[in-house]
Image (cartoon, rainbow, N blue to C red; front, side, top):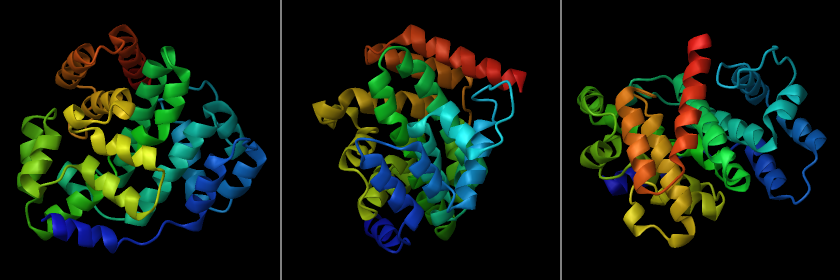
Length: 273
């Protein structure tokens, strides 16, 4: 199965030029918003996604965001880059997510939710760490596209979905049972294929096996694993997911009060919507 997954990853198309340009932009010490806007404007799909996300309930802006420039100014460069990468990845992989019971648009909604939880939670006590993790938290479930496609080929879509519905906090274990790899491991392999940032790859790879994590990436992997459970595709922000994620945060000795506050803020915004 692992060899089969590797072949599927090897066969993936290269990233579009827009993403390569965004990678180069991200590496710059001095980032000019006008240069970023010039890159974004080459890809109408990314611009449409950016405006859709900026106007979602997650951000809770009082007025409609109507231009790409305004969106970038309001949500910040790193948030913009995360959304742009996510949009490009979704369109590049271009497959179903039936095994997880969602559409590609819902995948983006969950990625947006995850990023906003990170923003409100980690941003409350470590702004630099929050900025560092925005791209990772937005993209960490990319491997679901490959595993869902695999489930379809092996005719286990329904049985896999029924299994994850029974316990939304054990999805990684169930992925391992069905496919011998978790979505995080597949994501890391995809990003290796695309030659993305090494730190991004290593943090995502460590998410499902914290015990073997390089100490350099430990806190980052712990944060991603908490958000992974909280914003799972079956029951995001359900009482079970919230309870489990808070327990994980306690065990990792992360800031629990700010996590609870972040969850409360996002839940209120969803109710208001």
